[in-house]
Image 1: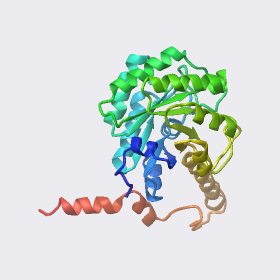
Image 2: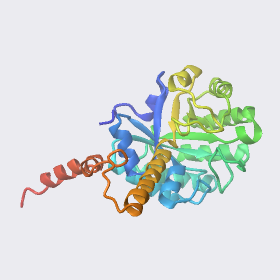
Image 3: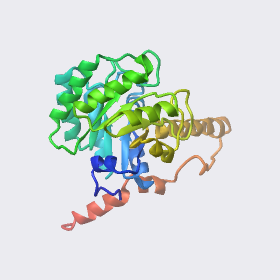
Image 4: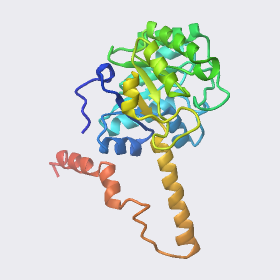
Amino acid sequence: MPDTSKTLKERLAAPEITIMPGVHDGYSARIVELAGFDVAWISGAGISESHLGWADRGVMGLQENVAACRDMVNCTDLILLGDGDTGYGNAMNVYFTVRAFEQSGLAGVMLEDQTWPKRCGHMAGKDVISREEARDKIAAAVDARRDDEFVIKARTDAAGVLGVDEAIERLNLYAEAGADLLFADALLTPEDIEKVARSVPKPLSVNMGFGIRARGTTPLIGPKDLEAMGVAAVIYPRLLTSAALRGMMNAMDAFKEDVIGQNGTPDRADLMISFEELNEITGMAQLDALEARFSGGK
């Protein structure tokens, strides 16, 4: 059972780094909860890729995003931070976007300063809106929340477009507008990460992508090393999406070779969980308990 005695905002203010594995559906949220984590990051890219089957290029809309978040809230006790993309419009739209995410039961939401349609921060071809427009959107987000504990995370993609110094200036503006957590995506070196962390007045989050596999943009850095650099939170948005795809591809390869190719009846416990494990992960015991509790009249 996750420890929810501290709010997300309280955790971010603590000296220890907050570690957030990425989740994108009920399976992944339950796996993170069973692994003993208290907090998770809901990856907008993960929702788009797994629910819609399309890359993180602005195909997903607000209602699809919020609905997926609500489903994850309803199946776990994790503290969940959501991905609000660009807020789906101007500052007025952001106001209602934040209301929708807060009503879904999340502990906070991230908003970014890319132009729309946005794209994953580690893809080429992205661009950013003006500092002033982005600041106004963050101000609208802060004003929209009903609970001051609801975290507004402000992301800038300016580092990859206009340089690290511009990213720092933008994050300072977003902090002045009331953002609780700051994030500069696609920083390319440990030195850049530490520079940003030491140059902003609010807690900084960083993105460690796949977590256990490197990619060509931000380097992998251990959480304790990030903490020593002044980083308050780290997300791993691609960890479980990538692992799930690899697992499904391996299972399909084995199915094609052993069942279709050889007419076999293999028992591949190395590739598949059991029926009993599946039921355990997806809350069968909880459902049985609820049924027993409310079926006393039978």
